[in-house]
Length: 598
Image (cartoon, rainbow, N blue to C red; front, side, top):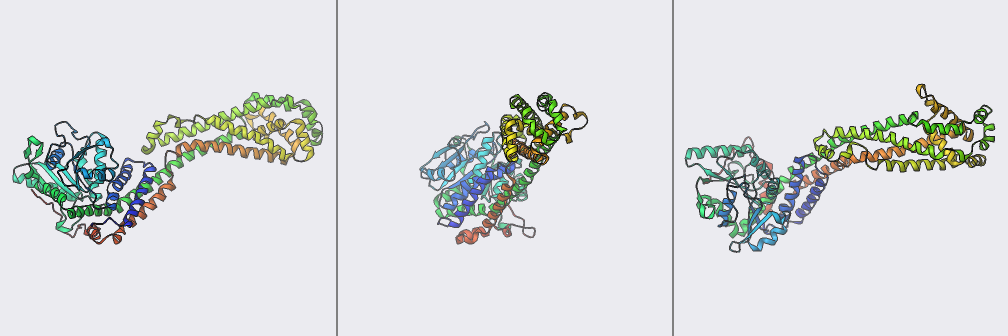
């Protein structure tokens, strides 16, 4: 295909890139889920987008393998020079060494290699080679240095052809086969090079037979073909086939590979065919890959809901416990209650209560003097006592939540990294104090509404709204109906006198309404503060609805990807058709074989 891929494909790639960014923004909760999301982003940006724009962009031929397998030696052989360092020091390759024609530099750096930092690339420009093919020596895929493995993984997502290098001794190592699994998933064309093959023919056959078994068991077949043609190209290199002067292999030892690279450099149509084949492999693998990432999202949504239920349970439990404690009024300090009892409990008031409400109303303003009321003292003490109780319960909710979440490996690190999550937040007191001040001040407005009749307004004005408001504040917590046993004492006496005073001013029904409204607004203030404390934990996990919505979008994109071939040019459709599941050998088809080119 000589033209750029159609607009339908480019539009789909744009959607997929947006989905990959959305997925990464949710902070995947496991290393494997994060790796898949990163692979999707890198694969779309470094390969699919490039090929969707043009199949004529320079090819990226990636030399990949474990430590000491001979990747750099193969690279130097194909480069015709000692371009990449070899040696006994491991890992030798710490950056991606890129051999390219100078004319391909811009296209590669702005396209296939756009996401690779300049400090991770060693560019080797050679104007004697034909443009259109870049050869890359990747860091070891089993490197103990995470950044090296990360770079190698990224390059796998960008390549058009993979030359996998191993040895006759280490071909069964576990880590390389994990990387090869990703090569299979994305349908990357693959050639395998086995270095240090023994000279004995029987030994060679035994090794090749075992490698064939491993490749077939791993599903690593050439799915561009079917049946007996579905084979991985394999090139064996004898032990000692090395040119020491150039740190390279004898060219005859890798003739099939060298000839193929030369053909790609000479033949534009061959390059386009390989680019189309690599793109077809990518597109065919995207559907299942997107579904797998959608599965990740749905599983995480379930896990997130479970974590949030736990956190909500602890905070709701402590909020209910605190409401119960506040309703009993036992948290209030006795000293403040005595101050208020002395103010409202004068002997005359007590006697007047027995003479009826009308009598009390008639003389109450003459007995209670606003200037003598301990408003500031009682208000300050009540606020501090409320803060102490709320802080205790919020801290317990935080401790229980942090303890439970610390047992979940996906959030354990975040919990460990923030010791503040084990207690209340630093500004807890300031936020709640501001709400309590607003609550107390709001009671004055309620009094104005409840005492709207002119006579009640006059009595209220003569006593003082702050004085009555303080009575309502205390009435929110202390009342005769809720005090029994050990609670009876100063609190009981104060509650009795306070209720009688408010009843005398407003009547029983109005008093009850006033106190109920005050309790409701206090509950709102406490609930809002607890919700803010809970939000610290909620911020550690994505919204489950966001995850399920993303999963649905990913599945739709997967379906659209599978339906894409009908909109592609004919020659790419032909290549894609060979990648459908029906073309992959099944139980009734001949066993795939490895091409044992030597």
